Length: 300
Image 1: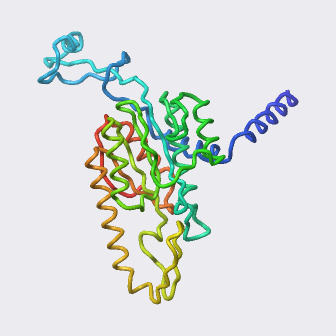
Image 2 (image 1 turned 30 degrees about the horizontal axis):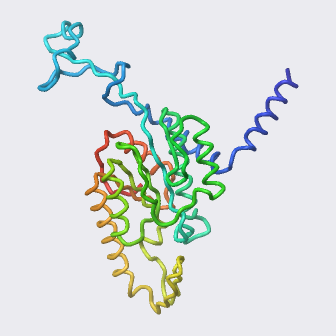
Image 3 (image 1 turned 60 degrees about the vertical axis):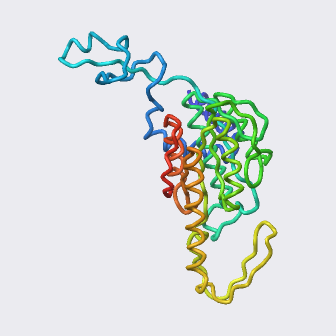
């Protein structure tokens, strides 16, 4: 018996060693979130019973459950659970600006984006959804194979795209989740989102920022270098520009919220000094909605 257990232990370790480290971390985050989520149940055309509710104006008479209604003086209709799998396209910004971190104790924005997106993929396949990585050419797939494929694309860098995803013909009513810092001009972001929305695609934006990008906490004489060949700028006293900088960032946030709202998309903002479970849950719940954008714009 001990030999059998030892053999099983070795096989388990060997199997774990074949998994990309990012996938292991992503599934750990997904497991934490899944403990507090009980499916994506909602009203629809499935056959699984969900709940009774009071009959209301506009309900068809053939939906009335007469047996349940006969138990009280009220009329009830029977609702079923939505069961049809969706196609969900995922995407991470891999441009140079995503490699930034203000402290060695923080992950880069790219590391956090990859972790959250892969953890979301893990949650989605557990729920029976079909997933794909935008721009990779892979068709939507379900189950462990699709998850491993996305993990491989991210780990090997073959899924890397910069800036914004290329607009591709996706099925109407498909979903997209885009994770990036979205610090490019708002006009560029609007053009991309509007192009997808015009095709009937519903989307969710996760803006990932280093906390220093929000507050500009530096002091004194500092030389800043643009990560995407924007050049260098020397500021003699950072404190003198902090208020203007924060005002510009706030204006950018408002603009991003507005353009997402115009297209019926949702937006969440996540800082890399916060736990990854928070944006993961935010995205998962956003995908559980019926397709209308829930533009909270709050931190995640």
